Each structure stands twice: as structure tokens, then as C-alpha cells.
Image (cartoon, rainbow, N blue to C red):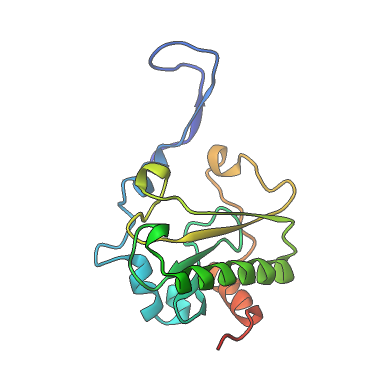
Length: 178
């Protein structure tokens, strides 16, 4: 994988900036950890809950834990349809995606007392979408002081709970839809 380190010596033109090198991220960026047998967001709803990390299912969208979470409880709201762009959603899909986002916020607040949220979509690979071909909205819980250098410097992500335990906790707290 490669090391993460702070380098006082840079290549290229000198400037007054330090660099944090994270070459281990290239595996993810290059797509080497993505499923080769299809779209992960198309496959997830067909898998058992324990394998898919799906938290809740609606008629048109579903909520799933991010396999590479920025913070504990990092959810993705995905339409079942395989489409890349927000403008491709139907009015009904847009409405259910919004309701699921609101519900995700309520559920995460009730189970982990999140102080705030980052909510958003990266549209296209150039905008940072890891899986650009299938639209998904991030719901990232935030707490005061949660940002730190442990993942970069220590190569350690601090998550207080296994993903399957987080999935079970959120799924139990998610209100029934129907």
C-alpha cells in the first residue's frame, strides 16, 4: 500500500506549503477496490442485509452504510435505478431521496447524538465521485472535534463500532416505511 508521511522536501517548484502524501488512497481512487462484477449500488439491494450494509429500503431509494466512511454512521442514499446525474431523477425519486436524507439525519441524531451533518453529492468522477455511474447522496454525521490527522499521519481511522453493528443500530431505529 505505501506509507503516509509529511515530506519537507518537495518535487517541482518550491513554495511555502508542506505536503501530506497519502499514496495508499490511490488504490481507491484508481478503482482497484471496486467490484468487478457490476455496480456496487446496483448489487447491494439484492444482498442479505448483513452483507450489503443496507439500513433501510424505500420504494425508489435505499439507505446504505458507506464501506469507506468518513465518520461513524456515514450513510449513502441511493436510487435503485442506475443513473449518474441528479437531473436524471424523476420527481418521485427526488422526493423520496429527500425524505430518506431527512430520516437518515433524524435516525443518526437519535442513535449517536450527531452535532451536525455534511450532506452532498459528487457529480462525476472529476468532482470526486468514487462511483460516478450511480448517483448517491452522502449523509456524513459530524461531532465537535471529529476531524483529526489520525487517518493521514497514523494510517488509522477511528471508528468506535463495526459497520455491521452500526447497520443493525440504524436499521432498528429507522421508522417503518410503507
